[in-house]
Image (tube, rainbow, N blue to C red; front, side, top):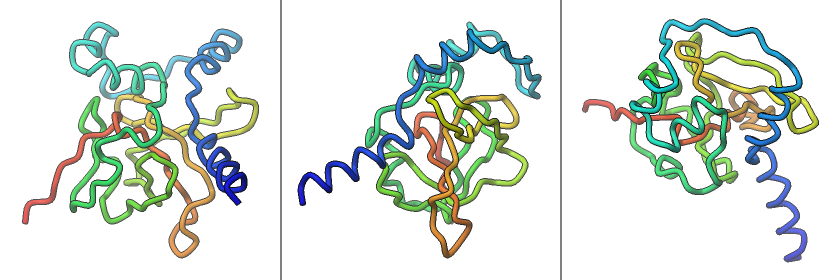
Length: 167
């Protein structure tokens, strides 16, 4: 029984595993066209604005360790915004506990999240990034709540800031 639980946990955690080295290798192999965003800054400007972890995730497409985000258990009403440019990305009413160790949402705020397909770890995944500044957020999977959208937006908490609703 314990072996089955450990195996299931390993399978779940690989859905959002840390892939920075694989991504870096894949990027050197396949040149990508540079995207232009409304909010554009130099690397030094981003570094001065963001924490080291935010820079690693948003600008270098890194991944924080599972169960480390201070937003993981946040149950307040409000909006999750991009830590890089404050663009509203997700509403608290669409957040759910996926058990994966990353903040998860069943839908995004339309028009504020953009998508790319990557094969950087050997299979197709849909990468999410801020549509305004291009900051990496995480990935979206098709294993979310079936009673809503069926999607699980697996998002790095360090890529987000939370703005509570005014009551």
